[in-house]
Length: 307
Length: 307
Figure (cartoon, each protein chain N blue to C red):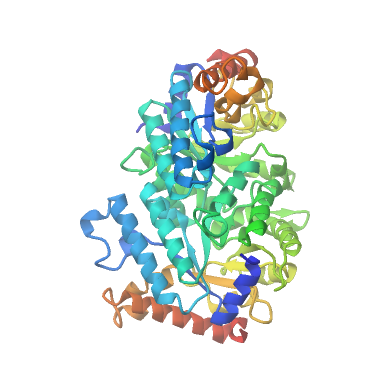
């Protein structure tokens, strides 16, 4: 595969939106009819429903957005059957021409980090999962990140390293100040080095950063400090981030950031704004409408409108 | 299940050793005969070999040690089939009466953290995987750890939070100094709070810490600062840690630390010390001999001898 950042840039420009749809299936939130009430505690039945639901979401958004982000945790919650379902979902998204960022927040040291990277990154059969990129955690330091970078570069895949996360508790460590510089900047500066050293023709690197929508000031600071780094921006919608909040994460041409929405899109059938119009029966139409609305919001209130 | 730290204490005392065997299968290191040369790139064949090998290791050590630690990364490397193999290995270890710490270094925010915790922690069918404890990463902060603690306490399970890891690069973030205190101490002090608030009759809490064998001075510092916290000590053997190096991780009665060895035990058949005596054909005897040697080393050169 060609360079990840080049593929991401091309996909965002082609779709004229940086919206990323998060695939976070939850048994209690599925549209009626996808999972019988009495099967909610059967991991195999839940896993199968998660796969059918996620593929249904993909069908609804495949012509609208460049990228989806399956959340590994919800599939892992169904045991081994859930991992088979995750494999199906990634395969289907690839077949539909979507980029896939697996949200696994993995990391480990040395050859174990290499094993995670080889597991998830790249096209099948080189990778048995086939994700285009993976989220990774930085606490283990530089020698835990470089094995991921090496595999990503070999395989035309990408990484998104946690830098400044969207949750309130993220401040506990990430905002600690070392010699006048918060920890998220220490991590951000290292990620930018990795990105600059791995940049493709788009000017962006194979290594990106997770930067929450809930901290717009820090997003602006990091955007200025990290010109080669794609941002994956969580926290839009359910967590409170708005199109104006995420505006600072983009470069002036509207590139450099993908903005994730999970619950606000995939469970639109039960949200006030869409429930009456669509309801459970037309849940895929609700997903499509919510996606179109988010695309319009970002186009109106952020540099994504320049794409 | 009863309190995790009480079960761990009882198991360590019963076996009179804190040795933990790390199940880190690698296709290129398996004893001859477990995986045909021409199947090394077939994820299903590799996954099946990993399950048979890991269960064979369990058979060799089940009467000697209290706890095993499967490394999720190597199973994930085989795709969905690898996860089915991981499930088999955890099941078998449980059936053999061993405690299981899954090394997954997971984390996420809010209800996603809860999903990981509910996935892995506790006995089946409550958890589809059935681990007694899970390793977790702290970068996302306090509100990412408390969901794990809540589920662990409800289910009699445990956690090991990365505090001071065994790899050289761990220093990059973990040794940064904030107001005179290194980051690993900030994390360690928070983990100790969680441990003290969840302590069982043994005096230790449901929340433990990963503290590498390769930093004996820091282990001593953390042991003194974290009296309610079990330490999971990686880095013994292949990474250079010795029985003397890990001595500081124990409390005076020889409790409070489990010391992991992966490659030094599971691949003993190809190590100089055991190869001639056992070789590939008698690889399980090599595993047993290496385990007995490590038990003896810790008994001679650390407080584990007082168990």
